[in-house]
Length: 199
Image 1 (tube, helix red, strand yellow):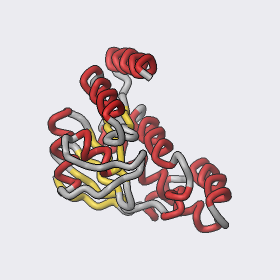
Image 2: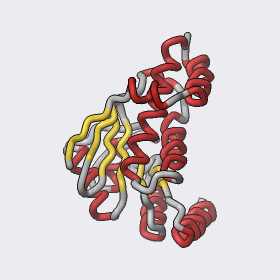
Image 3: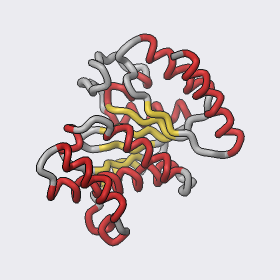
């Protein structure tokens, strides 16, 4: 609703004033003109440190022509790394494009995070959880690229661990919470799959 978006902008401006990082998940961008309008209102009204979305959502925010069905990703013709870097440069932020492999980019550099598990697509809210984890990491790491990469790696390593013993989506979700809680740096270091693409 318009009232909710207004509250988000007020909260975002307050966070900007206090030096608290702002992470915006542009969920559903491209699905309706209303969602597009509200996403741009937030982006124009708040200094956003990290913009996160799937390929079609990020492409839409970057000004590309896409067709989105609900909040699911649709095909994007142009190179996603270039789209992300261009958007990051124009908005002065970090851009995270989630999918089978995740792109984390700013105007100077780009990384590919190759962790995760297909089971993540079978439960609702994995994208929202990823945004929350990125926000938590951004709260303690000043570099938003490093925070985003580290947050995604930890979250997706936990998903890989959870999937090993999961019988289906229900048990996977339960095990994902446990795996995230029990995660340690040695395990992350052993399992992380990150590729530097640019920079």
